[in-house]
Amino acid sequence: MSKVHLKINGLNVEAEAGSTILEAAKAAGIRIPTLCYLKGVTASGACRVCTVEIKNVRSLGAACVYPVAENMEVFTHSQRAIDARRNTVELILSNHSKDCLSCIRNQNCELQALAQEVNVRDQAFAGEKTKPTYDDVAPGIVRDTTKCVLCGRCVETCKNVQGLGILDFQERGFKTSVGPVFNKSFSEVNCMQCGQCINVCPVGALCEKEEIHEVIQALNDPTKHVVVQTAPAVRASLGEEFGNPIGTRVTGKMVASLRRIGFDRVFDTNYAADLTIMEEGTEFLHRVAEKGTLPMITSCSPGWVRYLEFEYPDLIPNLSTCKSPHMMFGAILKSYYAKTKGIDPKDVVVVSIMPCIAKKSEKVREENKVNGLQDVDHVLTTRELGRLIKIYGIDFNNLPDEDYDHDMFGEYSGAGVIFGVTGGVMEAALRTVAVKLTGEELTDVNFYGVRGVEGVKEATLNLAGMEVKVAVAHSMSLAKPLLDEIRAGTSPYAFIEIMGCPGGCINGGGQSIVNASVRNALGVNFMKLRAKTLYDEDISMPHRQSHKNTQIQALYDNFLHEPCGHRSHELLHTHYTQKPRFK
Image 1 (cartoon, rainbow, N blue to C red):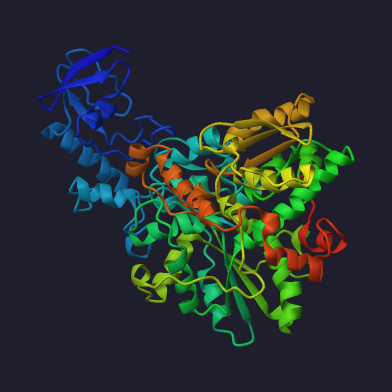
Image 2 (cartoon, one colour):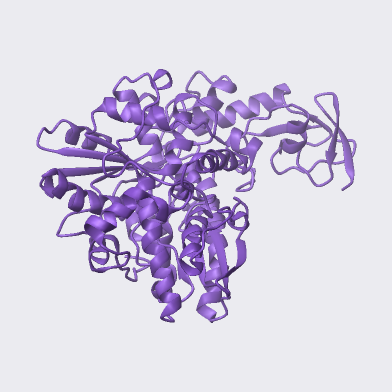
């Protein structure tokens, strides 16, 4: 690619032809503040925070969209550029809620940081504010337009990453707002509740619906036996809430903090991930043997399940009937565990620590109840757990590492660990399905062809003389072509894994928020850092296949009897229904 030569703040800079002033400045080590810009998601120049002065050009230009040109001279911090930038931020703040101290994004707010960077101290503009909307009706997502800065990141993410487009700009001028069609609630439209809009929001206009205080009430109720389980991806992100680098594994400190908070038992959802593989792998084998509906598609991502029910209800028969791992665990805790411990199931409170917003809607689905009880009572995101630990005054980084409780459900395999990354469920399933089909142990349990956080992965495997084609997709924009193939009857696959979020659970809507400056610098590498944490743990495990988990074997021997048997179907499987796209 050809090069362009320009000057930025008097410095000679060489940039790629077709690149922007923002990209050229970054490569030269010059920081230009931004707000709406998010690499790979949106570059509209809408907020005008990145305005720069260009020699012999009358108007200031938005650096995030302004292309470089030969012999161009740019001034990123001239008096004119600084004044314009400050005025822009002051205007944004004039229509912004001022409850910073109590805001969920306090000290992790891009607007707050921007105001400090451009040295805004006073309220330069005061007057009428845009009519607010506060929507907390949906199970997982809360929208507060008093904090919205109209950056459009959520709009572009929903449209281009998830292929849904339920969010858009509404009205014009001073009345402009962002929300679902006709300003409806998230609960009234075809929202998959993935929470990716929250992850890209620079402020507190979008956030998860908190359940922290309900959990605290349960912990302080002496009649309740409160059990907590943690999803595999949480350990790869929670440390970021306490200033640790992205990808720091904090499993031991997480367990130690949960014990100090007062949970009666601390378990790992990885155990239930192994259980899911036993059920899902058996279901797949049954479908192959009995010429059932193929391709079978994984069902452990509730955001993806919601998407299917809204957008592709005709493909519901392709979906595995397995509940997701944490819901399976909840069902076992309120049946087998409660009976073994002599506890009334109504007094067992199950709390799931999840990287996912959609788990909050999943836990209240009527289809998932057993004997009138929810499998899981409360779901806290990774971020909520971070806040809960701080509420209890725990010095997280200086805690000793502790192990999960080992009675009954303490064992898990490496296959359970990698559930947290895209391709992990498929790889875990193949590690067991291959053995069941061939009757022979694998010499290598690694299925590298389904790994990676970029694009759709495909693999063709020869198992017991049978050619099995599989595919892995993460995010609905990547999944849609696979679904269209199934609908058209042209899909070549027997088994498909679909995760609702880009990268899988490691980048779930409830994970620690990676601010735009870091995302813009790292690209998808922040996901790879978290994924490496899980793959490293997988390698370190004594068993890396779900069927080798001895406590799973004991569960079948003592209670479930067989995968996909009568009791398993009562407790661990569910069904799905078409949902109206709008209410």
